[in-house]
Amino acid sequence: MKLNTNSNTYIIIYSTILVLIVAFLLAFVSSSLKEKQDANVALDTEKQILNSLNLRCLSDEEAHATYEKIVKFDEAQKVYVCTLENGDVKYVLPLKGQGMWGGISCFLAIDSDKNTVYGAYFNHESETAGLGAEIKDNADWQAKFQGKKIFAAEGDAIALSVEKAVNNETTVDAVTGATVTSTAVSKMLQEKLANYKDFLLSE
Image (cartoon, rainbow, N blue to C red; front, side, top):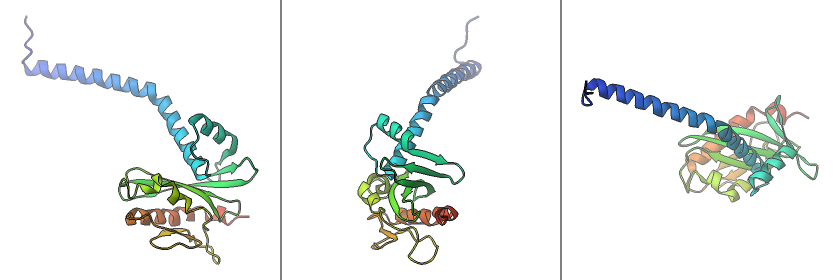
């Protein structure tokens, strides 16, 4: 009996088998690559944390070795405790917020006084290249956070923020041409740092 390749039944069966084969192959490839993908994600996170500690431009091997040597995660406080080679202790706080087009995040490194910013690294999912994306791509802008204070001279309200044409002890000038993203960064800092107030105000 000759197979009718033009029949609806044949087309449906053929399509179903093809879809199943492709799905199996994709699942197999995804499963086989998962361990490597997870390792790459973990390494990227380690490098972001090191960037916030002003340890940038390290190779993958150098970054992982340095991270393993100086960084420990405090599960109770949800902060990274980092002991630099000179013995200084820094704390890195992970922060997440919502940008103009997607999520934004930050690793904020602070001195042992829990008030002075030591360094910062920002990331984003889909901010506009050349504008909002500058929070990640512009290391000079990130460097402006160094030395800023989380709290004002008086009071315990979170004061660290990003504002247009403002540059003082607790404020960083906004990214040029990226008002919405800068406002989102400021909101993230204000709201998410508030979650760490007990830690920041503790002795």
